[in-house]
Image (cartoon, rainbow, N blue to C red; front, side):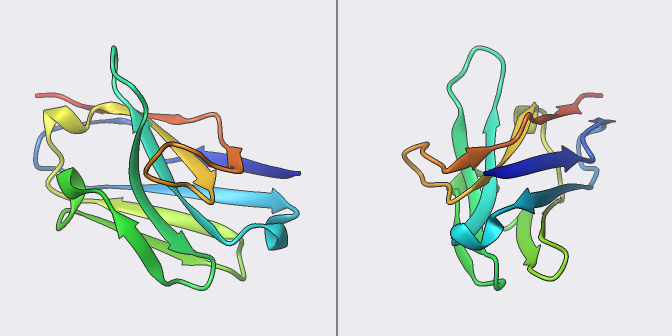
Length: 119
């Protein structure tokens, strides 16, 4: 089992930056990567980005490419999502996951942290 705990979500204004953190505990060695999904109100959960625990970026979704940076720290069993130039359409619950894929699958999923972008 792997437990994931996200933090960092809050209300920000358009154009602001924000960093989300995810700390993993448990059998993380059984997983290969970590990453993020997000789900906006009334929409399906969508893939955001993924990175190996060793720090190799695997994939970044087109809507956030160039604005979001994903990273990981295998010593701390942590992952991060640095978000810049935030837009209203980035408003969503952001979920940390292990082995996330564009199809929406993952081996483990966190409880989520709310990011609201509003003027």
